[in-house]
Image (cartoon, rainbow, N blue to C red):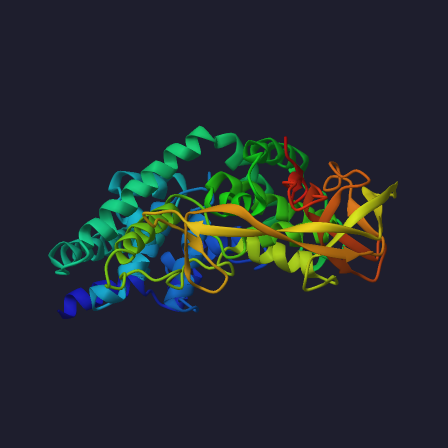
Length: 468
């Protein structure tokens, strides 16, 4: 036992003096923490190779590592994956590690000794680093074998733990990899936009416009994609966006683009489309969602609580670094009003720097009231803002109520106002800021207003996207 302990101390816990002489510690130093993709990868490598110690909680570290590795097209590393597996399975009891395993199990099942040796050679690691990497890899394989064994023999009359925590997440991850390959152009464009955000100076985010390459292309792609939802009612389009992985990739990228480029009110409105919905990312996240949906489908037909919680501390909007930062940027020095407003457009005037001003007239209109019912049998779709599961639904117009209001003029981005014409009804999010344009708005819904209770509303544009 003493010899084993001594070996681990030598291979995983070298003295500060020994590591000070290791050149790899300088290679993986963490620079600007605001540049989160690079900083997180370097920190994980530094810890894995013994240069630093873990500073954050287990849950926070697991979620951050999984997030960076899950960036579509991101660099994969056997060393980083080994550290992730060891860290997420650093538990005595299997029930304390199950939800974390939904993320790191993907890496555990792909640990490959030949790839590890190839990575050690490719990175030209020092002998000290190579010894640490091999020891870490060995420990990761041991912890995974323990986890698989425990899940296989776990007894629960309602949930098959091996199927729920291994088979279903793996199938979900493999399906996502095929989906990524089929839509590689969109995902690679989205990853490029995120890398640009991660590389920007933290001091400039949200304070001055920053040019981002690929934004116009992503806007155009999403416009074409959302046009497929033409003819549906606004609540149904919202659910589509919140439950579709490709729509999530496009919208999260657009939130980033518009916030960085200075169209903050657009970014806030677009962010709200994703609020409360699923968080998509990559194969690990897809595996988690597949397991959660399967567990909740069982819970929906039995009185037994699913053994997987929403998020589990690993997948919340704040853990989705891109959306978290994009929201911060969008809200910097911007005062957003709580409730949307509706008004009829009177005139449109072109401003400068990509803005137009819309003025409105006093006129009455009939506002539709929607009724949405769950489709049977129940199937989990996304999380509602009240923290409860939302099932697939179908909506219809239940009735109308009369509204009347004259709104003050607001500036809209040219892109978001592209489908708006005088006489149309605009439901908008409004905000103000100290510099011009001081009064801004974002069109949540643009429609031909019903004149009577017999008329059906025709949705022209949804969240700045014209519909065919």
